[in-house]
Picture (cartoon, rainbow, N blue to C red):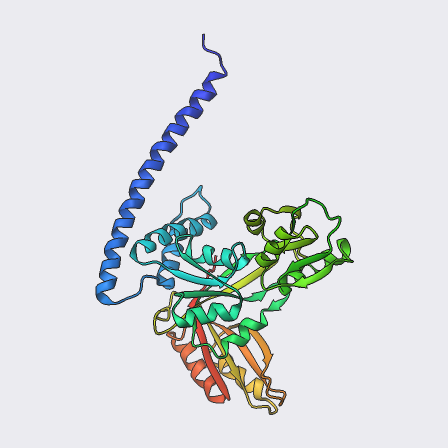
Length: 368
């Protein structure tokens, strides 16, 4: 008589055999999809159209989420299919993406999350270089942070939007977990903590409580802080686990950000001469920067067209115009797409009352 313990082992072996067979079926199907993608690429080359269309990919993912019967969670569908589409897109043409480097930054993580891992990575020393490479054509797309749920807007990014010819074609949001990284797995002997100024601010409370005497040293990126910590035992860094793995550092303290649900929103930028502006996807955001004359009621007059045409505003930020006249630029996110008549009418009337008006981008957003 067989040992009763062998029955579950036989069941497990049978299940694994079935999974292996399904994996091979999936691989065959993925290769069929890749072959079709190559055919699509040839048609696009003849038409002179681009490989990446964010609204098309958003519609594909939304459709798959809606059709998902489970037990696979719908939240898992998007990253799986982004990787599939990334790998297939790479067969058409390489996608070059610029972001704040070096390896291991949250900007790199945002770029990989949006485009998938089958990209040509273009790490940059600062946000200005990200935009320069994208304008010059060294990169097809640029990724920059624009807003953090704890510290608010990333001011350098907003200031750069005023003068760049680039256009926002997408956005992605990243849950940011800051970790204290170091060569030695102890808090003792830390003389300085290196990180991007935003990360230092987002961990202010934890640092004040646990490392009150350590210098807080701002650097160009969190990954740069990790690189410095790898070369000096007296330095700790605030960065991602990926950066810790990249530079061989211990996670001395995980998740030290003051806000548990700390998220950063990133904008995806492209040059309108090389990448068409996304068509309406059904759930879109339109970003503007405007200014009005410094007179009573000017801001009220600016908002009237939005109310009149029923256009909702999801973000309203002000930045000094640095003119010395106490004037401001207003960064506005509207719900909808300029191809929609009510949005177009509101924007036309808004433009008429503004001293300065610039359309920063219109792009699909993830509503799930």
